[in-house]
Structure formats: structure tokens, C-alpha cells
Length: 137
Image (cartoon, rainbow, N blue to C red; front, side, top):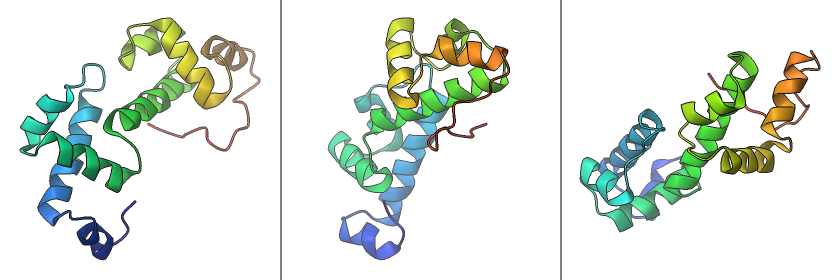
């Protein structure tokens, strides 16, 4: 990931490119439940899809939709922990249309089934102690 101008320029990204890629990230986050397709997103920011994909990976260390998946799961975790939502409600709120796929992705990231996570919360056991549990808002 980029920490300085030298690295960004070495990767062939201008300041304008980086601003457009950050804009793409912001669009993905705003439209988390119905994200645009890659080509639509590229058109929205005025960049070709190849440069968007490559630049995004350089800047954020993951693919566009890998990033979106992580942010969806982080938001779902927060909703299940703080907002007292059901698993189905959280699943829909973050844009997953298939609860089984959501449960599989959640379990893969956090090491616990979302239903079990909610039951632990209700029993007062707190969150499983894992360093990668996000504190998102």
C-alpha cells in the first residue's frame, strides 16, 4: 500500500489517478448494497477498467470487490454486535442476497457462525477475543 508519493509514482499512478481510485472506493462504500459493475464504476470515475483494477490493488492491497467484501463483513459485524440486528437483517443491510453465502463469508473471516455470534452477544459472553475483529461504525 502507498505511504508516499514516490511509491505511487513508481507504480505509474498520478495524483489524479489516485484521487479517482479513492473516488471509486467511496462509491463502492456508499453503494455497498448495490455496487456498480466494474465497467460502470470505471465510467463513473473516468478511468479505464484495467487501470482502475490495477491501481486499486496497488493502493489498497486487494481487489475492488475483495475490499467491498471486507467492508461488508466489518459492517455486518458491527450491526450484529452493536445494533441488535438479526443475522438476516444484517445480511440484507450489507448487500448479501444469500444468507448462506453471508454466513460462510462471516465464519471464514471471524471464525464463528453469525448465529452463534449473536447468541453469545445475547448471553453476555461478549465478542470472541480475536485481534482482527474490527471496531467499525
